[in-house]
Length: 171
Image 1 (cartoon, helix red, strand yellow):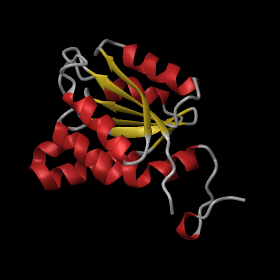
Image 2: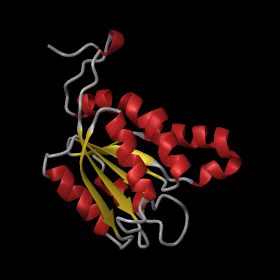
Image 3: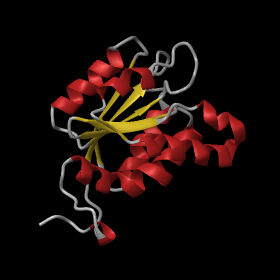
């Protein structure tokens, strides 16, 4: 089956990154493009109360993007606000995403993997992922979780997929 190219926006949540220093955002875009998707917008949003949530809401409401992937701000530090800002926006949470990310992280880095607040959900009909900003975490989340499931997740979020054998499409 030929992969479907989805239009995806990426957001780096950071007070310190610039276009020149955002290695994580660059890697994320590269991995999504290698997966056959159109990353038509890449933003850096400061870790400021409500700013990230507002931007995600605007992008989701625009209906221009099938998915938004946010990197950074998912830890337990005082400036880490990504999970806190995104959770209230979700009309549906995808709890298994964060759970599986932490399990995979535990296998790679040990107990520190539990410190991630990686999460995913649906805002309107746009699938939103939030992953840590480290290069290892970006590669792990994107290659092991996001790319293998994103097309099906977007279809489900938009009511285009029937549950059944092998993800058969609805008529």
